[in-house]
Length: 607
Image 1: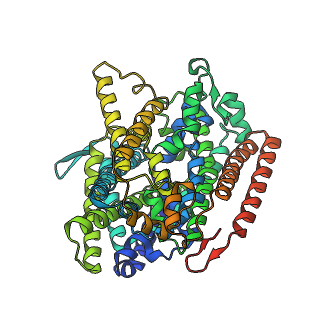
Image 2 (image 1 turned 90 degrees about the horizontal axis):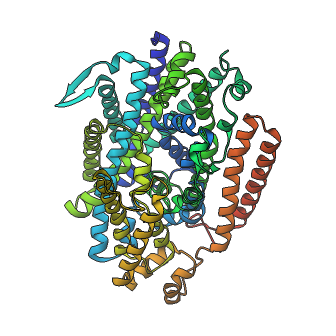
Image 3 (image 1 turned 120 degrees about the vertical axis):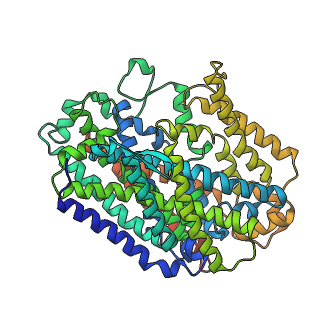
C-alpha cells in the first residue's frame, strides 16, 4: 500500500491544524501554572469530557480491542467493561468534590487531606512514581502500538534499524519518537487549554475515521455487511456476556470461573488503579475536573466521558475486529488485524484520513500524559521540594523544559519495552487494594497518610515478589494465580496492611481535618466526629441520593452499550428494550439532578 498525494495532503493538514491550535493558546498558557495545568479553572463540561474520551482513545486501544475480540469474542471486552461501576461512582461521588478542593493536581490533594512529614513524603513519592515512572511506561506502550501501525502500513519502516543518540530502534519506532517530540513541542507551547482543544479536534478525526473504516469494511464482498459477519463467524463470537464455566470447553468466548467472574465484576473496578479509570477519579481525570468551570460542569464532564467512553467508542472498533477475523483467519498477531483492514479496504484519501486518525489518537494521549506528568513533577516535586519561592513565569518555564525532558525519558523507556501484552493486567495487579483507600480518604476521617502510602507500596512489592518467585519456579500460592483471581490475594494482603498501618499510627491532626471538611464538605457517617466540631458547615454531600444516581447511571451505560450491540447483531427486540430502559434511567437522572439546589458561589449542589 502506498499513500497518494491526497493522503499526504490530509495528514499534513491535520498536523498543521494541530500546531495552529497550539500557537493560538501559547500566550494564554504562559500566564501562570494555573493556566498551564488546569486552564484557569474555566473549562466547560463538554470540552473537558471530550478531552478525556480523546485521551483514553490511544493508538493501542483499537488494536487491543481487536485482540480481545479475536481471542474471546465481543465478551472479551469485559476486561475493561467491568469498570463502568467505578466510572459512574466517580461521576456522582467524586467529580464535584475534586472541583471543590481547588488543588492544582490530585497529588497536591495529599497535603490538603493529610498533614506533617508523612504527607510530604507521600506527595513526593507519588509525584515521581506516577508522574515519571508509570507515566513514561504508559507513553512507552502507546508508542509501541504506534510502531505497530507504522510497520503494517509502511512495511519498509520495519525492515531497518536506526541509532539515535546511542539508542537502537526500528525505523518505525524512530518515526514514533519524532512524533512524541512533536507532541512535546505543542504541549509545552499551549498548556492544558491547547492540549484540550486539540484533543477535541483529534477526537473528531479519530472517531470519524473509525466509523468510516467500519462502514467501508462492512461493504466488502467477503464481509457482506452485519448479516455477513453473523453468517461467517461462530455464534458465540457475538455473545455480550462472559460464560461462567471451563475455558477449555468454550473456545472463542470469554469463559470465566465463578471466582474470576466475581473478581472482574465485584472487585477490579474499586480495588485497582488504572490510568483513566482510577477509583475516585485521580490522575488526568481529576485534572479535567479541577479545570472545569464549576462543580456541575465537573460532574457533567465525568458523565459525558463515561457514556462516550463505553457506549460510543467500542462499536466501530468491534466491527472492524470482527471483519479482520473473517478477512485474516488464524492471524498470528491478532491486534495487527485492525491496521491490516485499514491497509486493504480503504481507497486513496480515506487511507490518509485513517492514518491521520491514528496519529490523532496517539498524539492526544501523549499530549495529556506529558501535561499531566509534568504537573506532578513541577507542582508537587520541583515547586514543593526544590525551589519554593519562584514566580509564576519561572514555573511556567520549568514546566515547558520538564515537558520536553519527560518526552525524552518516555522515548528511552519505549526502546526497552518488548511488548504491550499483559500491560493492563500488570498495572491492575500492582495496584490492587490501593483503590479502596483512594475512595475512603474522601469519606472516612481516620484514613491518614500512612494508610495511602502503605496501600501504594504493598501491592507493588507483592507483585514483584510473586513475579520473582514465579521466574524461579516457586510460585507463591494465590498470588501467582492467573489474572484476575490473583486480585483476591493481593487485595487481601494490601487491605490488611493499610488498615493495620492506619490504626498503628496517629490520625491526621484535627486542624487539618477541620480545614479539609470545611472546604470540601464530604458527607456520610465517616466524618461524624469532625462534623460535630464544625456544626456551621453545610450542606454536605447526602450519600443516599448519590447512591440512587450511581445505580441509575450504571443502568444507563450498560443498557445503552448492550442495546446498541443487540440492535447491530440481530436481536432488535432485546436491543430496543434495553435502550428504552436506558432512556428511562437518563430521564430519572435528569430529574434527580435538576432537583438539587445549586450554590451560586461554587456551582455545586446542596442537600
